[in-house]
Length: 220
Image 1 (cartoon, rainbow, N blue to C red):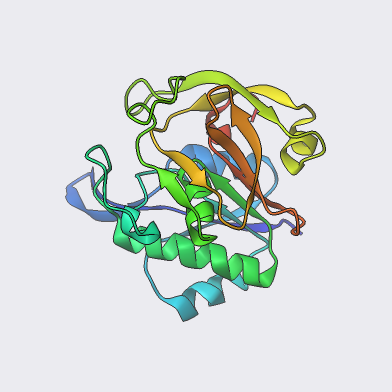
Image 2 (image 1 turned 30 degrees about the vertical axis):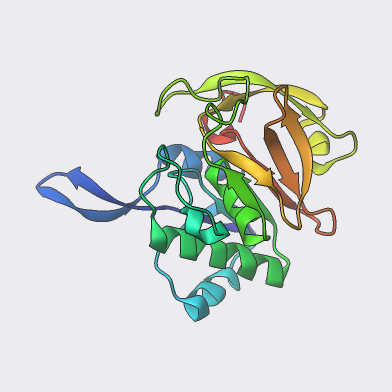
């Protein structure tokens, strides 16, 4: 049977046809990447209900936390930087709840970009709110909506190294924030400027966060 993979999505204002209204949306590339890997995909809207989220996760074989806007810094006890996005409070609560429910049930988790940052925050960590002003040397995003390529290096024997079959690769980044403290997770990959590129839980069979966007890679 095909594994059922849940993926989080955005609550944003969107326009189509005669409508310009609050909606739940997700780039099709995420769904296509999962389907091409043999998964049946369920999109999970950002609606906070702890009991409901656990009921959803109980029916999944795996969870993907998608990329998107910055996590509200109140979730890790910091004041917002001037460059931080408007908080998406419902999405923050939903994804932190989804991650914790998935960990409680022991199902595989993949966090992508923001999704990896959610994993860190849900595990007691915190973020660098703006890489350029914090002095990080690499360009991780020239402007919103674009991707920048740079190298990442992984710990030998780590989950990400086993999945990719290498300890060094070129990744496609589009972010201005990053993980400063991984909390209870382990950093297993970095960029040349020290930016965290992968997080893992070594006690789990598959809990992996990546700071780049594999769903937008040509070799996905």
